[in-house]
Length: 408
Image (tube, rainbow, N blue to C red; front, side):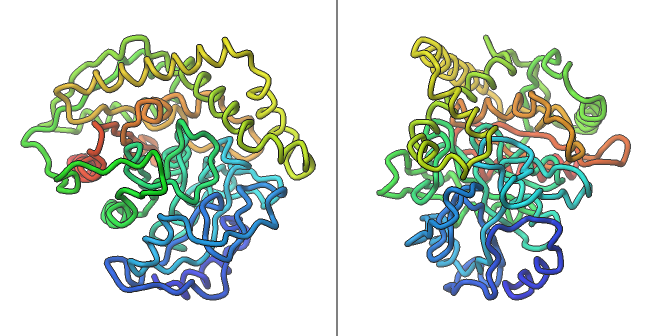
């Protein structure tokens, strides 16, 4: 779909509220592997000449002077950027029920949340507006929307995709990742945006051969303790079990991740994110309190006022869980688990506290994680599985998930 066609499609779906800024014509692009592909980017990623609101009213007048590195790479490769996408306010939350830019709807389940914080990024793909988008993932903010909307979403290896031009929520946990309708488009976009950037201190050159995406003769997947699935919605649990049962020729290995308590780790990650966000934008919140919702201000205040001992304990929990996760992958191609404990829920319902219980681990460990759709046992709302792999196995995970999907 060309940029002009994508813009027309987006204009025909105003009630979706997927966009914060929708252009009248796509931005100029070069020629390359993405020529003719329409894309859009989350509104906390800089696009030259466009506002970057981070999903708040406080930053509505802030216009980016230059493209984020990932946007510049997309445009140089021929991708036609058509605008910036709605998101959960400040990237802190997973419903994209945005008080300033509208409640983003889920095209796969009208009246339901698309997830967040990259809800607009998932909705634009699921609605057929664009084949691929960029989102950000701090504890699941690419993968949860991908799961709820029934599409593909990748949280890359930490350092693989440059963050220059991103409005950080948490410099410890943030990543930029692609969402797409197909694994092919997901891989195409990743190949373009990946690679070192001298202006990003966390950027890491990938090892030689990282992009070969070679599959092993026999896939070995680690299955975390089933007790962690106890809090799953029945359809998620049943769909995941049925998916595993169809994977003929795949070796499933029981795996214990010592000390991993999904809820406790999610709470530690949230505290770290709130504290780091408070450091980054606390002054703006104090200067323009009406530019942020009461709930967002309260969440950031919690992090700003947390005792040092509590923050130290949270950072230690993240550090130890990251080590445990990386060690658990020894001899395995990936871990496999549900993406989220629930499917999309209706707008207006309280957001489950455990949305990020299964996604936070990859951020903490700096590992790549891929959400991909699997059959729903009742034929209803989308279901999703997640692969978490060794560092720089990003493209291999995409190829592996495509193979597993074919088996199922």
